[in-house]
Image (cartoon, rainbow, N blue to C red; front, top):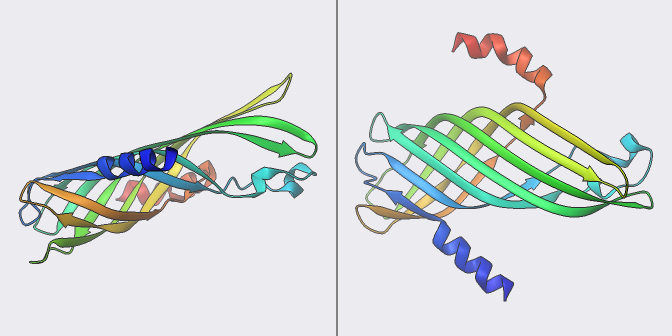
Length: 193
């Protein structure tokens, strides 16, 4: 029962309201999102085996708005939130992990408008990521809440239904999150922009 319900949510939530893909009118998107997370933690870091060595997926939502400067070039603002609660092993101890990850990014988007109903696009967005991570053992709790520099590099394809609406068939983004040190090193370049 969960799979048909999830499929229904994915289909209805990936609907993009596109006011006109052949003009400079703004576009708005809202949909379901899956993010694959690499914790960066290994058993060697903790001197024990842990399930945090493995990548895991978190589910959430994705909202975006794009205002076009020309027929093809636009500026996109993007917000996403992803959440998960899971059990992790640290040696022989079991803990419960709660994670929430928020991305707020913005930058250029380029769409490849044509006469077909398919409109591919690429984007390069930069901004911040906020991660809230809590690990709870029987008597103790550990929390790590950080805000870091983040990128969203990728693209996708929209299927035009009519002059007002399009269906976002797919969107794939590479979403690296950098530590505060990387942000300080990039700061002179960001100020120059």
